[in-house]
Length: 100
Image (cartoon, rainbow, N blue to C red; front, side, top):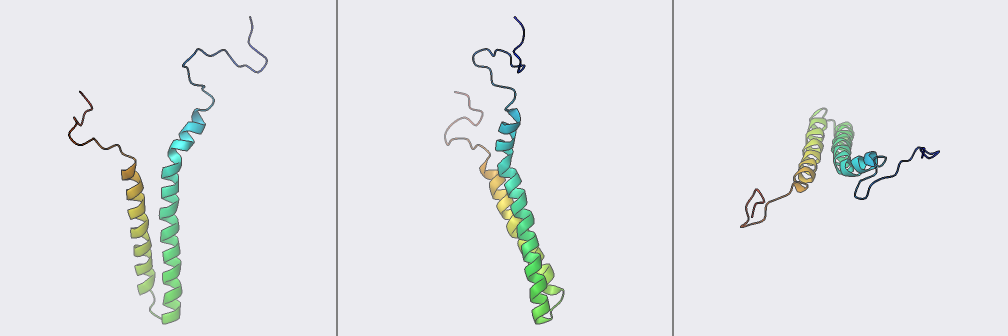
C-alpha cells in the first residue's frame, strides 16, 4: 500500500500528531509573550506620561526619568509575578522530590 495523496501516514494509538507541535508551543509560550509585552507597554506609557508632565510643569527631565523607572518597575513586578506563578510548588509535608 502506498501513501495517501495528502501524505498522511497512519498513526499508532497514543502517539501525538506532529503537525500540531507549533500550536502547542505557541499556547505554552503565550503567557510569557504577554508578560513581555506588558513590561514594554507599561514602560513606554509611563515614559510618555513623564514627558507630558515635564512639558506641562517645566520640570524636564525629572518626571521623564521618574515615569520611566516607575513604569519599568511596575512592568517588571508583573513580569516576575507571572514567571513565578507558573513554577510548581511542592506540597507542604511532602517530599520536594515527589518520592513516596
